[in-house]
Image 1: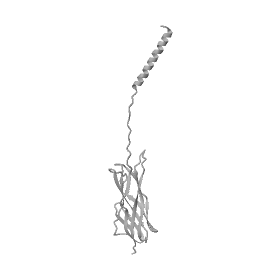
Image 2 (image 1 turned 135 degrees about the vertical axis):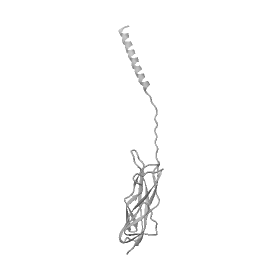
Image 3 (image 1 turned 180 degrees about the vertical axis):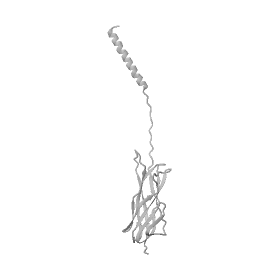
Image 4 (image 1 turned 45 degrees about the horizontal axis):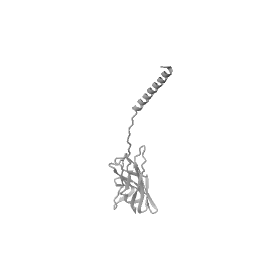
Length: 196
């Protein structure tokens, strides 16, 4: 065999070995299809039900407060008197959404009640949702109370106002769900100054 033929043979052998190595690598490759899925939860909803109602309030010349609990009971301070005739109620909101989902809650710090040109303020709004509220079986409710400040010789009248409660699914990374708000109503039937 000539040197030229030996060289040709060597090149052919090297090419076959290289091709075999490539084929061996190709033979080791494998693929499969993975699955991807997502569930888009129904939006959380909030619906105002029972209005917040401080009932009939009497006041003398020094004023005071009427505190409405989330259970709907009113206690008074100062020279304010809780009169009979109207059942006091906490504000109640009904919630629906994805089962057992945690949600965040936003309630205003104050609500202004108006009767013509006269007004009173409800402050220190409270709720019974707790520190980590969740939609048990896809439903829930929120009761709202607050403290009504009644000025000395507050003008008589039917006072009312509205406030907005906003709920949203508790945000985690990747959440882009729109919050939903509902407006509640606050009433107070004030029978006029009581002087004694």
